[in-house]
Amino acid sequence: MLAPGWGEQSVPARFRLTAALMATLALAPGLIGTLPAQPEGLGAALFLVIGEVLIGLMLGAAARMFMSAANVAGQVTAMHTGLAAAMQFDPMQQAQGNLMSAFFSLIAVVLVLSAGVHRWMLQGAVDSYTLFPPGVYPDMADVAEYGTRAFVESFRLGLQIAAPAIAFGLIFNLALGLAARLIPQIQIFFIALPSSIMLGLVVVMIGMGSGFLAWLNGFDSFLQNGGG
Image 1 (cartoon, rainbow, N blue to C red):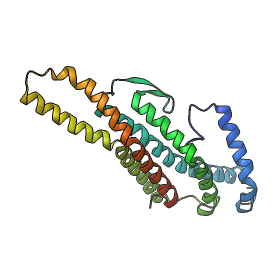
Image 2 (image 1 turned 135 degrees about the horizontal axis):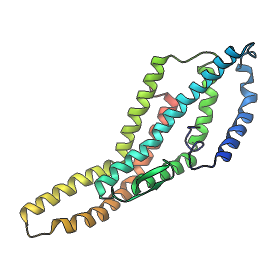
Image 3 (image 1 turned 180 degrees about the vertical axis):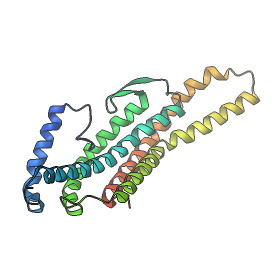
Image 4 (image 1 turned 45 degrees about the vertical axis):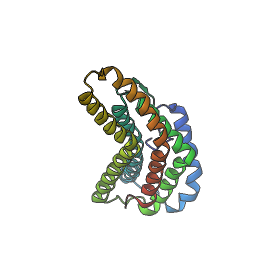
């Protein structure tokens, strides 16, 4: 429901349900030995089901935070390149967003599918039965620390993707301020926005590749090490 690639809201619900059933059929034979005996009562069954759901939500929510890093990067980039007012529907967020945010979100999904992150999530689901045997709930303090690390790391990576645009915005605005002070005759407001958009897009084009590569490596490191 929350895993990157598998759980995107723009993917039809029937496809997501089919993918979930196929994943269950593929993973169940290898995990059948780790499952406990069939519960005798409804209360014991609910205890097992709720525990598995909570573990899945914990893993999926952490991965979804990393997907939101692309949205953060798009918001910051748009603000520093003069494109904050260019709005369009973001299919990944299922809401209205600025142009760069929607573009970065789409790029993140493409990278997730091309790099195989969606398969990492299936591997994480398999490994969770070793780390958290059925009927054993994770420690809430560890869950809180895991979520905090995911939030901090995703926000850091979002700013790292947008770092070239942030540097450009600071230098460009400083140059405009100096030009306005030194040459008051310049109509600074007429040249600021077009120049900011044109030069900003060039900077984004140059720095986007390395930024998303760092994001993908950070995502991989977090999934492999659990945020440690």
